[in-house]
Length: 146
Length: 146
DNA sequence: CTCGCTAACTTGAATCATTCAGGTTTAGCG
DNA sequence: CGCTAAACCTGAATGATTCAAGTTAGCGAG
Image (cartoon, rainbow over all chains, first blue to last red; front, top):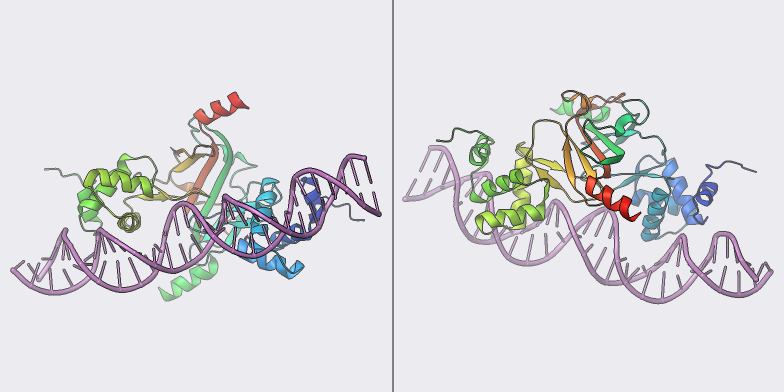
């Protein structure tokens, strides 16, 4: 039928997770959304399957994150957000004013971001890069009123 | 006497803040410490001046951060930490296991980290770079037990 | 197709960092 | 010396996330 390994149900199965309506809906919601928070994911999921508890969403997001099916993004000072774009090591632009998050491709080639100038003996496995600033809309607002 | 503008009292005065025993001690504690959390800063400060409330520490750290006298670092999933090294846009290495934080100089020259490949129209003013991995000690532990 | 195991789900309470509220003290200027 | 706002205090509230303990149901074995 749908031999698409990225289809929610198959992605879950492939990760060794059970295929439940809730988790399928959660994965769909995260993929369809844009850096959604837990609350938004819960609401979106409920719109698809009727009812899910917040805890189920938290547990599912943990499992999905551990399985590499979703990625957790957590800008300093704010709650966690989730995105469906995984596998590449892309970065984020975060608006200080409205909180909007935009994806940015890795500044350098493919994942050489894992290369600090001096690793102090650490074994680095991930580079978390967040650019802070003002999004176009907020820039306009600010320059107009300031 | 001590014509040193970086001396705690002068730094506070220079930033338009009042020179109180508590804030001098807080600034000293942050500078002497290594990416301390609020609790550790509170304890260190009490060791210097006897008593300070947690709220006073929070308020002072906000003021000091706003004044650019200390820098707030907040690794995803953990509480905020503060450091006295400000002015340069250095990055951090964080150990996933023990939480240790090490400073790393900017990967590229001086602050060109503010340059994402595509800024999507954002006006970027800060780049937050965190390298995640295992510190030397935890690497040893892990390879020995795993 | 049924059984059983355990992942997944549920409700409800707890934790932790941080902030809010409101009232009191005190640094630093006039 | 006295005023005013910054700094401080105690105590309560918030909000994201986690823990606890009991129930339901996916799915592989029989």
